[in-house]
Amino acid sequence: MNIDIKNIAFFVLLLIASANTHAQNLVYNGDFEIYDTCPYNVSGPGDYQIEHCTGWCSPSYATPDYFNACCPFIGLVGVPQNAGGYQNARSGVGYCGFLTYDSGLPNQGYWCEYIQTQLSEPLEAGKRYKCSFFINCAKEYHLASSSIGAYFSEVKITTNTYIPINVIPQICSNFGFISDTVNWIEISATFLAKGGEKYITIGHFGDTLYPDTLRWRFDLPPGFSPSAFYYVDDVSVELCDECINNTVYVPNIFSPNSDGFNDILYVRGNNIDALDFSVYDRWGEKTFTTKDISIGWDGTYRGNICDNGVYAYFIKILFLDGTTQTNKGNITIMR
Image (cartoon, rainbow, N blue to C red):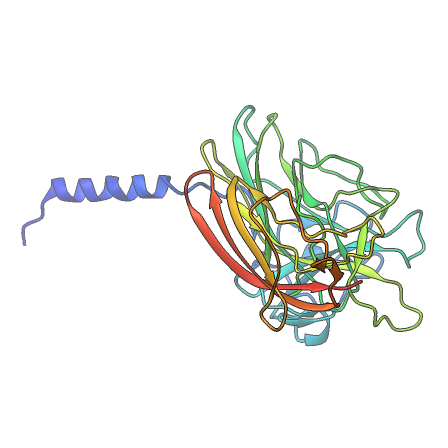
């Protein structure tokens, strides 16, 4: 058999070049699939289930959770069924979760949880990085939060409290309350590194004194306080000097009750050049349409207040780089 050494060399170089086109994820175990021991219970004070997930920890006294299909106690920290409801992992069979708000626990403000890990290498000064992770609002909780993001720091954050961490994150959701209990919602953006950042901390970075929440369920049993809980999966941080961050997000619930919070439904995203957004009632009649991203729906049609309930939407997006995206889904009005 004749072997062409030149062809082999070319093939090897092609493989190397192809491999180099994929940026390295600086987050080890960002899909939460690797664990030292299987989680066995929901977290309580002093019970740090997150530490079963290799590489991850809690930066505070609060107790984020780790969920995996390996758990024999399906109703607690299993996947897909667990204490937060029913949710498949976005990838694999594991994910983490954290409270963004719980006012019923005895503390100095409210209970707020974060997850933290060390990057595989420090960030380089002046370099642009892309951070991305996916979250989902747990079905068995009654509130939704905004301002969920990621904070990069040179030193590990450590605090013995369970109140919000008062820092400004480099990455933060900018599309209002995240109340989707079905789909995994991507939070993604790019940022310039100062240099030396070694740790990433993910959680809620909103107002530390007067948190803004949306009540989307009202069947809370007596004696229980409303709270907001999110699953998180597939965390990545990649060097991305020339990356384009095309994103679009349509909230699946809003409350146009004139209280000054979440009264208008807007389309949010990055690098949007043009859009065509329409909302339809259950009979198929168009109740709202706009081609201007600055104009949102106030929950009315021809000057009349629309009934509470589920409405369908259709949206077509043109991004600045010329690519297009078409989405459809449901929006719930809840006053």
